[in-house]
Length: 518
Ligand code: HXC
Image (cartoon, rainbow, N blue to C red; front, top):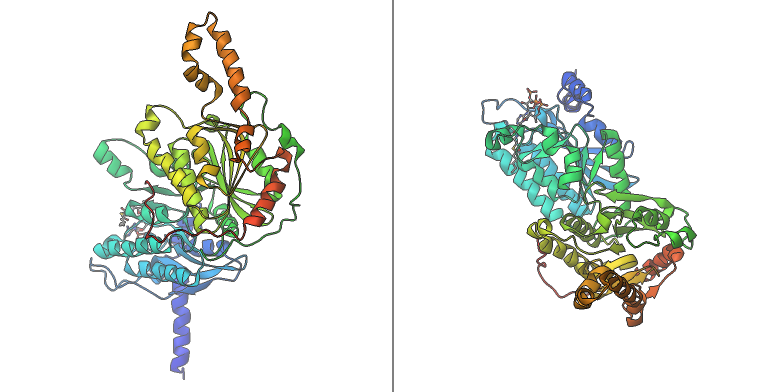
């Protein structure tokens, strides 16, 4: 005789088997054929081996309104639960494209909402692996309501726990706005796309032929729109990079990032840095040389590496502590600040501030990008975002001016005047209102025009200006620079500064929230 209990045990086994099977062998094979892993294979690679604990394995929807009420989909197209990454708890949802295209209906959304709620309650990151046909058409307005629940939670969790999205398949329509509100978006090359309206709608409305890849593929969002923070060749590498990112971050806004000693001596000097800046001020060099030299173990995780490449943002460690690094890149557009660079850096600065990550700013900026394209595109609004973000940040803020620091861009790039904690300059720093040519053309215009030899007068005035202003010493005399340092000592000075700033406290008046110029 089979006892009811035993009956239920085998029923449970059966139901679990069905859920784990997802959409069945054929759909799993189709997923693999596209170079995509299944929802569960992705979770296995993301989390520490054997650490995944699933919720709602047996949850199904109520059925839709097209007469298929009796049809329940195993797990309702999403796998949810928690596990660890290098021993630290994270919550995860992974959409299962093999089950009704990973489409999102009421039950699917409730499963995601549950893990998001837990993540906020216990203070652990939430990672979403997106692979979905969007709102489940059969569920009508219930599916739209279901998205609203997730959007709401994205905002509630923002600035409380890190939120990470991986786009590993389609992500279309309003669905894109959930990843867009998370902190970091990964996209997998050739298998993911994101757009508000797909190629068919584009064809109907504006009569343009365009492929999904051209419209919203990983490369486009990595280099043109800036929607993707990381573009990764395949699922396996993508999940590995998520683990790497998590290791730089604290679990929530009450904690600091985990300390990791890479055995790189804090006092290590790099004499080659004394020769990094070329003698000719118009010559470029690669800021990455400085970045990789000063960070622990030369380990740097760059964000939006192919977007607005004139500014570099990313995470590294100094003396074992995670830092957020913002640096002008003189090798791209001479390191000028434009609208895209400003918004890219502003969002990064705000992330670091929210999650207690000290900021280090390496400056070589000739100014803001001139021209109608930038002005009409709102560089005033966008530049103001970066200014606002730095001023708003209460984490330790340190600046090193390595070469150019001109005009408004000097101020915006975490200068003393907007209350950075400590700023250093290399002897090669140039801190002034304008560069020599621009300045001389304004203040000696008449004299040059009336001169018998305008070129010689111009050269003479520029030389004079250079001697007077193109150095860090005037700023140092005023105390606007805390010290002029030898380039070779930069790492050591920064680590010592980070150490003493660790207990920094800033008090701000109470307010609901500021009004950043969006
Ligand atoms: C229900 C869906 C679905 C959806 C896919 N499927 N999307 N079922 N609702 N939104 C089902 C398909 O019927 C199919 O079921 C299975 O998933 C796989 O889909 P295929 O079309 O065979 O796969 P593929 O050829 O790879 O194409 C994938 C796709 C396409 C590009 C995503 O399925 C598609 O265009 N789907 C609709 C996308 C869409 O318009 N979604 C609504 C977006 S608006 P069977 O049983 O045949 O295997 C939106 C609004 C959000 O999401 C609102 C937020 C406010």
